Image (cartoon, rainbow, N blue to C red; front, side):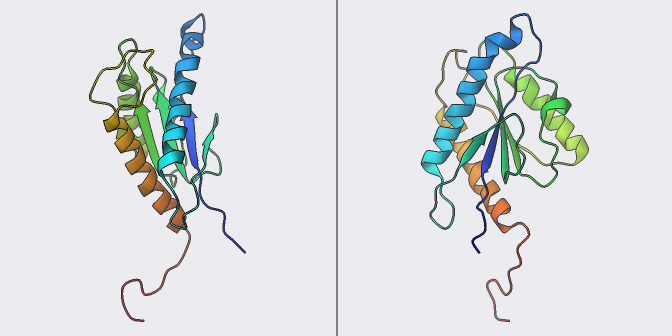
Length: 167
């Protein structure tokens, strides 16, 4: 019986306030998630050679790796992935209009308080809010995290004997 390969869950995380704030960010946030999924699926394969699949959802149940993307402030401890065993990363958009870095810092602090490790992704250059491209440094960090996270998710729960030696 073939074991299912882990997928990467992408969590579009958005400011929950109404009256124009949330609505003004929905397209930008979903575009970040779609761009990250396209980048990952085009550049990463499982060790078996099979393509990696990404799921964009409100929650990331039954995934091996979790990547949150956001261009704005959100309540960190209310929106991050609470599964202690899922490798996590957060991409906080470095934009001209809203503080993706503030959410990134708040969520990482909350995850740290819970003892959950998480990988921080933030671009070195400021982008316009309408810029849908993924900067090279951000793309490298996303791909590096996803490769490592998939390795962890693939090996989780399996037993390997005598790796690199004689039994």
